[in-house]
Amino acid sequence: MPKALAHHHRVTGLDVRVDRVGDGRPLVFLNGLLGLNEHWFGCLRYLVGPEVKGGIECLFIEPPLLELRGPGCSVDGVTNLTVNLLEMLVDEPAVLVGNSLGGHVSLKIAMARPDLVSGLVLLGSSGLFERSFEKDVPRNPTREWMEKKIAGLFDDPSRMIPGMVDMAHEALSRRTAVRSIVRLGKSAKRDHLGDQLHRVQTPVLLAWGKQDTVTPPEVAEQFSQLLPDARLCWIDRCGHAPQIERPEELCKHMRAFVRELSQNAHNEQAGVA
Image (cartoon, rainbow, N blue to C red; front, side, top):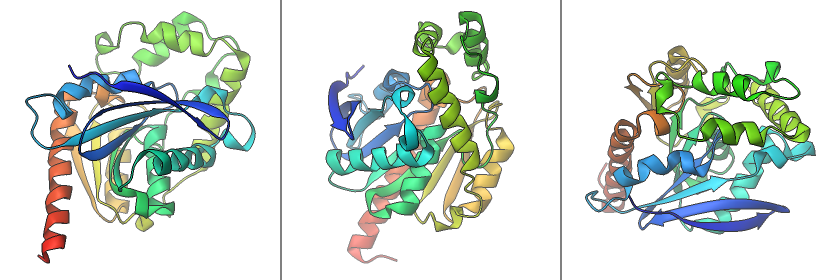
């Protein structure tokens, strides 16, 4: 499997991990609340492996979401941070691939800075409706509580990455981290995008787990109806994290979408309607 090269960037006083691999059209991957760059690495062999045709560069962005404080601990704060990173890291419009909160942020960027975006891939995106768990996060989450919550993200919990529960439990062992995740979850619920999605003019691929219980299938259908240029593909036997549970099928849809974007761009340059 191709290996990503990790870098760290200081943005607005925060240390942000960025992993990148490949060469070609940039795809920028944005995590959900407890997401890590490693959660996407199962996709690499299907996007930049030696047998894959078509140049793609994958950039994985991991802001320290649980360290955010004040106004920055919000969807708008994460959006502004991500825009700053995009301006630093890529020199052409990128395809933003966002899971959960990362999809929400991708939509916000597409509306505020369309010059930075050539397409969106949304997986279980928030922004319309999400059964988030911030309302019942205990002050001191136990490992058993965390395991139950993370297992609920999957159609098949055996697909969880080894160590995923322990890492999440450790991340929420600090009271300040619990406050941050609760605040970010509430911010995402308040920031309802239903009456704004008509402003997203970039092509959108909705790659949705059929068994997603966090952002259920009807949410994907609503996104499909409200976005001007969206196509919806279902991933069967899959919950809220297709990048972990069904990476091969997800990447098949993503590669087809990227090829379509490239062909459309080529046709525009050639003057083909």
